[in-house]
Image (cartoon, rainbow, N blue to C red; front, side, top):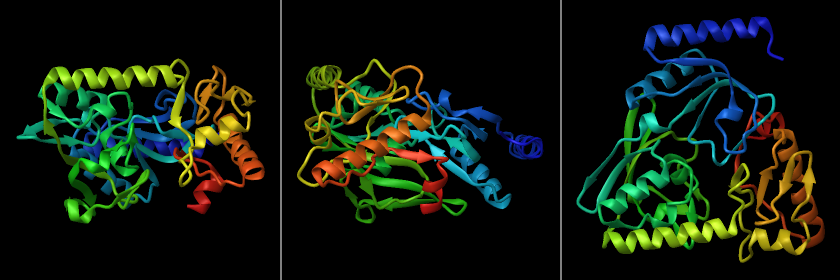
Length: 313
């Protein structure tokens, strides 16, 4: 329960941000409306900047006020605790999604959704992003974790990244960027925009490949229930889904959270799950896999508002 004193602080902060920066702020915003798991308690402050200038001003204000903040995209790779987040959530989404083309390169802001970017590129006859057409996250999040599918990754396409450094934009070139399996060297840096190098191809070929990827995704993933995509990273030389499946864990449930019966590396919200249910099920799967298979699974999804995780960093 948020105390009246704390709530009053939030209202004062929100009012100050709106008056000084002209940015709309929501107070006590339920995060279950902003995550694909459809769970999560309230964030003290919830902000969606409409430009890079607003974003930079907002971050500077929060730092000056010593307010903790976290930046998210579409919330498709995110688990927020039932208690929510004591601080500010800054969402980079459709309001920060400008896109342009120069030759076979595209320049896009961090909030653009991957399927939107893939479709625009396809319509321009640019190939390379077909594998992202069914990934519901944003470009910024995809670069941070080097999202991938069907043997391709976003990092392979990135030639430049612009990040927030202090109160200014900083350009990072390809030589400054290092990508590996589901990670990058960008750490906690806020990504503002990126340049990607694509190749020319016929629109028909591109759209055909996109449809093939979408069909394969529909056939192999539980798209009808809320989830956050793959929960665990694949251990070296192995598939997390195969290990979990072989141990007979499909269908394992805690409360409203269930290991998908369609894809063993997905945990789904069957309709009444809490964030605690999902978190406990993740830990249960990790425990069983380590005990029975000797493999230590590591999570792929980001978690916010869990005290033990916040303390451990």
